[in-house]
Length: 178
Image (cartoon, rainbow, N blue to C red; front, side, top):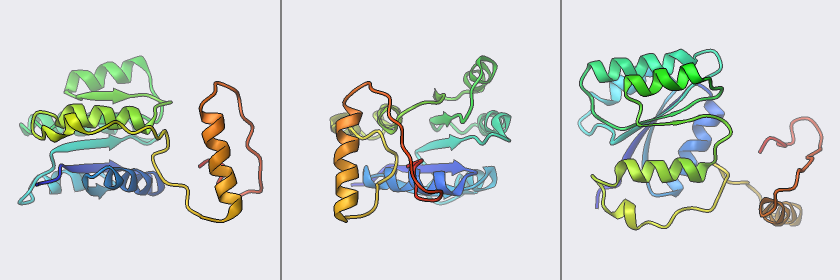
């Protein structure tokens, strides 16, 4: 059975790698690119992508809209999910006008994005409708099996089930943002 092929375009390498890992764990094939050139190159491949997931950077919010506009001018009907790093009403309207299938403004969860991906691919891949939804809100795995990491993962599970505010502290470079 052919897996859905997702073209992932994100300027930020860390974000691109995190989403790529997340999508592959969910059973998708992924082609990744840091820019629009990779997107248009992928469309000329023997097997073109079934969906485009485009993440904009702070410096290039309008670039995502422009990329989709060029894509639609070229008569490429694939679904496009736009992940904005910062959002405005003007940007959301512009994105929808040029043909973005789904638009996410921060904060958004990986689970919400995965639901959207499955919905966009449901017509071409009926098995997407039967796939259970993920409960993870992280678009990447936390790596490590040490007792300390196991304790952190258990604590995250407890805190995630509440609406309590949480303060995370630690040395610079220890991965608090994860």
